[in-house]
Length: 116
Length: 113
Image 1 (cartoon, helix red, strand yellow):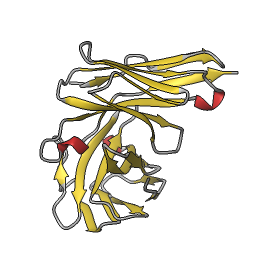
Image 2 (cartoon, rainbow over the protein chains, first blue to last red):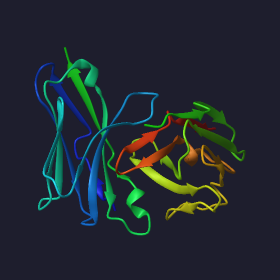
Image 3 (tube, rainbow over the protein chains, first blue to last red):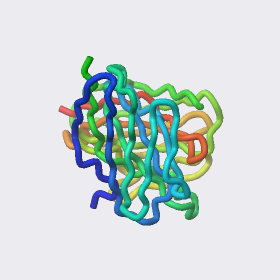
Image 4 (cartoon, rainbow over the protein chains, first blue to last red):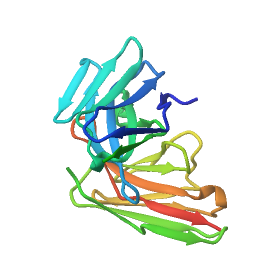
């Protein structure tokens, strides 16, 4: 049972345009959400996060939106750059329960390609 | 954020053998996490390792197959024992928490033949 779903395995956008990566989750115990970027032969790199008490968090070109009622979050990259081409993972962490707030559940990732 | 040195970066191993993966962190951390990413799949947590105590394994993972050591607050190893081709994956260690995010090692790409 996949608790974090990234239904688009790949996405291709033009440089300068907006990239929108989507993520859905099923576990209502998740209260913290993160996006990671992964280049080939490297480990995932933390990008941006959002707590369930917020519906938006912005950091430069990256904005994450959270819709709790729909159990949906999205990552917007504006403007997209060729260097953004990577696999993007959505991850979620549950409420604190004996230390289990440290556990991350990942989606399968979306390969973003930004074309010059 | 912490910097993690993970090795080996890749290995090709014969079935039935074991491989030990090492992670060294540049600062003291309470918890270290070990993940597996099978081809085309998401990262899956194998176990959480605290210094001075037995690792806590997730459902589907057992200590006999994936023994973990955590001798101090900056180092941990994961052994993949009695390997089969199904163990071919990328293995990653990680440290951190919700406040500052999680940092990952660069991963170990294991191929079992």
